[in-house]
Image 1 (cartoon, rainbow, N blue to C red):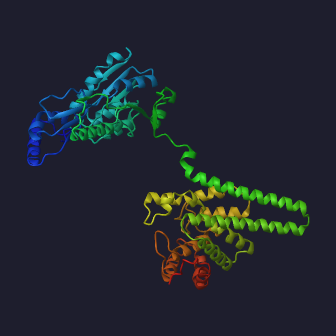
Image 2 (tube, helix red, strand yellow; image 1 turned 180 degrees about the vertical axis):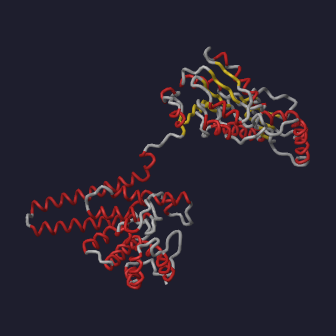
Length: 519
């Protein structure tokens, strides 16, 4: 109907004529009228335009029994708890003396104001309800900005201002809440999430559902209560951020009140990542404890220097096995093959050897590189296994696996785990500084991470994944060359280009049975 914008009699009669022509031959099964304007329209024209079509009116202020000569079968009253909202405000701010009522000139708003007038006697004597004249939006802004601490604003659903400008739902609430010097109370759930304080609100959604249920009953030939007065459930809902802004203590809220926009605790916000991370840390700690315990027993039994050296090597090898196994576990969760982490490890060692890394560092690189994607343990499987292109929001979640990996591996004094932590955190940093998570560039990126990144990208492009087919060999080589001094360390790209055939042979050596090398 658009009655918020057009409500003069000539418009309504034209609308009635249009409906009459539209539904002259095919009538609807049932009709739901959703406010006072729609109800009045159906009372005036409904029988003539829609003969014998059952009508349910929902969200009606000052509702009365439907007349017998109309086709309105039931009216669902919209009864906002004005008294409950204002009483809660007084409890939160006992020094309140003036409550400013702000509304527009719509018939619905006039009905609400009549309801509010009827509750004045039930409030404490020191509380003065003041009806604010209808203003333009700019005048309203000036008004709410200049209120004093003993005042508060009760904002009714507001769509049309004094200059006949129509605003969408929630627009006026947002504009006023941004600059108001005092809290703004409301009693309808659709006014929340706009910066208002809140109140004892009712839900338009519940009104709509009850209207639909009533129409279904009528069409099934079942009786419906003509005037439904107790349809709505009021809930005390307040905006946590606004409570903090106006220094309102949480213990002044009703015990049943719920909060919106309250920051999540760290554990709740990150529980999907923390729980698997803690499990991994526990397993690592248990394995390291058992390894350490075994070492101590052996030292007691065998005091020879040779035995100690042998046991120390066993600890190192155990660490390598643990790291490699965990890397394969992560890849398995991502539905990738265990061969991927082996290939990344072997290719990384080959490249590291040709840039002159020491033997000890080569051992660390080969052992730690399988842990580059350990942070994916905290990424939802629905995103990891998505076959198509990720959305921007999903890619932002994927990017967090670098920080999750750092959190899992950080804090160990073991050199192997320190290197693994660097790789997990930095293997998506780019030589040109456009990577993530920290935008590191050039030599600011760990050499272990730079080498692992190149090996990882090479093997990933050559492999079939859930979201892509394997690239042809020439395309892979061309892509890596094109990213020289962009994504990749130029020295590493030069090594890769020079020894690409040997690197390809390393990859083929560690292919799984169900994998093939790209042509």
